[in-house]
Image (cartoon, rainbow, N blue to C red; front, side, top):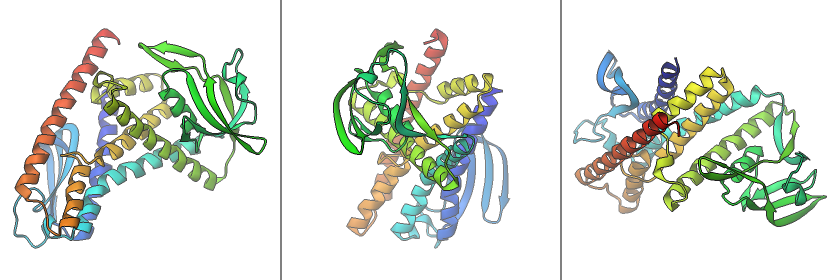
Length: 340
């Protein structure tokens, strides 16, 4: 059941991503030859109008095949015949749809809560370390220089800390105060030191506009979490061995299903779809962001990069991406076997 749910969730996210490309391509007048969910051999395919709609065997991706996107074509409705600004919109639409889906899921979660969190300290746990620095009714404005727009910003900033000592900007009695070294107790999990969150915050019951605003702040917090995580990987703070792919995600989904934790399942969906949106916009070959990067160069040059050269670059990028996926899958399998 957990595998089925994982496949459905991945398919749902892929569908929204490809729908973004498809809808904007149709809007721009580009001929779409195929809209596919999944990769590999076709399971079923039906043609309506000029487009074949397909479901393929491997649930690891999808694509929208546009005329003249990756090959030479003389069709007047080919992708490359579009103005570059329209091509940028088409190419970025998939990732943007993932971010919109993330917001929608977060909004559902927010509406399911009686109250939402603020950034104001309400109380401290017994033997709290941070109580030596923070006070009840302190409003936390920033942690380690990162602005705190909602309670999740605070949590994610503390999660990323590695030594248990953070700087904070707080609003206390109407005055902004900077705290250089707020010390937290820590614990070690899987060989990594993490902060013990030893204070609680006030909750509030917002109206519908407050819920929408909170959902935007929470979604933006997820975007920043993904961005900072990528930065930590590049800087070497976290290794490739700590990444998870579809196998690891399926295990996490399985845990949520077994615990009947559907709120947790929705949060996983929100995190993954936001992750897909941010990752796809990175200016790397084979990703949507890499294609957009070449289009931006085209804007400045006044003419496109040679399609064959660009195709080779994206091909190499795809090969490296597939290699990374294999390594991540291997790590997931090792963790499953060893229980690590």
